[in-house]
Length: 98
Length: 98
Length: 98
Length: 98
Image 1 (spheres, each protein chain N blue to C red):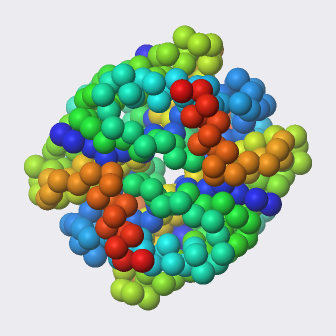
Image 2 (cartoon, rainbow over the protein chains, first blue to last red):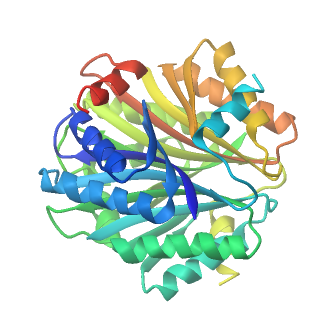
């Protein structure tokens, strides 16, 4: 099952500079072979359900191993069986209406 | 790895009455042995990472099998290594401050 | 315009114990006369659009005044013009299907 | 108070093709003078708290006027008093770590 997802990982208890943790998760997603698009409030991901969620788990494991005591992650995950759709398709379909 | 999570499943393309689909996911979570608390904007869940995410996947699979063409699901998932915490603990710690 | 909403306020840069900040926002919502239901991953709110969002703003202002340097808040907000619905209606309509 | 936000508007009860509604909200944000970045799972916005939330309300009002019976919107909103930050800053600070 294919997913179009959006993930935002929030490390708690490590101060205000979170970018190194977000970058670590980006690396995990890339290692998993997922297509990603970093944006200002998260990362859009396109790929297989199991590969995606295994990567999110590995991201949590790795950040905890880096000393992050608590993580609060927000995920939006979309699946559809009516037709194929990519990250680019979603943006293009809106831009075509502007 | 234990999670405290919140899931809201939004079926698209099936009109405005979504409760039967939400109920189906509740059944999936119960069958998986997860602790759940239904609320007005989702379901809080406490349990093992893998069990939880396998249940979310099964929920998507089952709703698609029921004819839902598209699903948009929001998940908040928290993990922590500093201490144990339950769904009830989280509510009680706030109520103690009111 | 009436809303059914869910709010989760995450204070960053103040350590791991967040309940006193969440409680402060609960007080703000109560002062605003909003109907609320605290749950393990946020607070469900029923009320007028303007009253609700003014309260969320006041919550941010008050937490910053308490010394919270950074806040990341998640809001789900639903509006509908087909019929009236309360927080309790939403839960009951799912429970009736279980 | 300045916000960095992410908004995803989900119209319910109007079938599966949602892009025209998303585009309408993009127009509302642009008319409000907000800085926006459309992405595959929402729109990032930078601007003043009141201007932003007034635009989200106008988006709901306009979509309901277009016949959308029900809307479910997800908003992430961040505020900080420790320093200034733009949408671009947030992406750059992560990319610098990759």
